[in-house]
Image 1 (cartoon, chains in turn cyan, blue):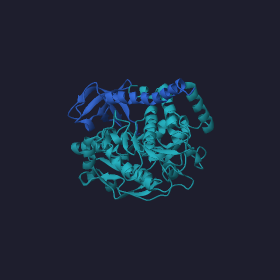
Image 2 (image 1 turned 180 degrees about the vertical axis):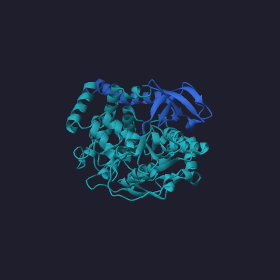
Image 3 (image 1 turned 90 degrees about the vertical axis):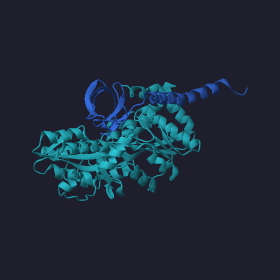
Image 4 (image 1 turned 135 degrees about the vertical axis):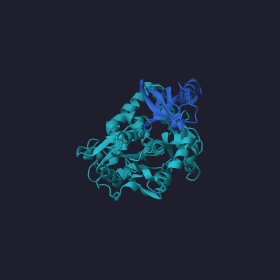
Length: 383
Length: 90
């Protein structure tokens, strides 16, 4: 596929890994800790075994950028409650179907007879509303600034067309507050960040300046193919070795400095910041999520229905919080791969393909030491 | 869900409603190009598609420049090794 295959060239990857190893120099294991904020990057890293190709001095730490993973259990319970209202068709991305609430998932609600349908796009949810005027159609909106503009366009369209039986249960979150929370956390000592790629198509590179200017850490906005990630690691290392600390853009084929102005204008029109929002693992973070603005209040499911809105603590055995903060690796969780698997997930990180646990479970379960050996071997072979 | 995939615009189906047909790896589907309304999108352009929306125009020159930079970064080590081999104190 164009713009994908050429960024997966194994020979180029091997050469790049050698340059990275050389640049990293002879330092101790885990000397460089780079957090990839975005779950899409986590997926690429495990899928292509990139962490095993890198020298032991470089550790990739998985961050909080999987919107499915950060939704707290109480919000999932609210979604399931909505799906159970009479006359409601509840629409959601497929990823959210198996996310466990305190009393089961949306998939189980569907099995009980609730009308839960998964959609590829919010516009598909709007179409369901238009086609079913006698029903109430609720769309479960999740995602960072990448996905929020699609909800915004859908809402402007619903308003234009006067689709009164359509509403949105808004759980959109923003990327900068969790990065700040991670930087303020005493648990982690990071050397730099692999910045989110698709969020940045919307917000641009400027919102990350505080990372270098205030916290003194380099950040490189990166694409999603293996060579993109490896190149970003190289760029981060080069900054550190040269004593620089900047926001750099590796994903320039897609991300512009100013982001997408049309999308940003729509976000400003359709949404406003919530005073605070609960994140799984990170707790309440102020001004970190979006709700519908007053101009779109008629479409706000939280105003249309009196939802329970209860706060539910995560199951005790689940360590998604620590995984999301990068404090532990997926396999260090007590229930990883035993009680918690993609088929019967306990925590959110095991559900989404972008969740660190699911990505590791699906692609990275080869014994790590063996994998490391294979990785070293393939690099050596390539030389 | 957060995936963005490259697709090529094959037809602007409804410019008022900002709809276009894109080809993603041989599969054609109508998507919204509302978020790129100001980008002067035309047939043949490549876009990044996410949940049924074109999010950004893909810049072919930047893509080539990135690949070029990747190769140069990998080359640095090979050059260094060559230099190491070819010189020495005798």
